[in-house]
Image (cartoon, rainbow, N blue to C red):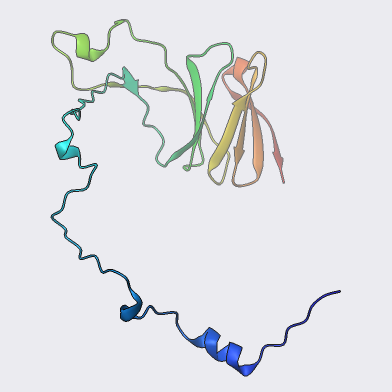
Length: 169
């Protein structure tokens, strides 16, 4: 059996009032002091040390003109990587290491610039951001790209990433 409750006028008036604390009901008022350090102030911690960050990357990839949303690695050739982005394109590039085995920070005269990787292929055909891509298993014979345009596109990795087929919702 369900209980019924009919609100009376007293309940409605109470709901409309804002809940405020009467200053006389407060037990203690704590003044704020912005100069008082907190218990976990890093200036007081002798164990705190500054960490020097250094970019030891061997190269970078900057062909996309918008944010990168997805990355996939080839299952048999880990140096082959595909990226999809908000610029409606996917790129395939190789991350094979350069001839020098050591990062620039170990060189006697390091060069401040890093090489920009050139793409092996540029995949177009989507009309909105590419938000998923994957190489097929187990051999990575195909690359599939999916975009916010509702398209799923397939490319053959064994034939210079030639376009094979498309499905759209």
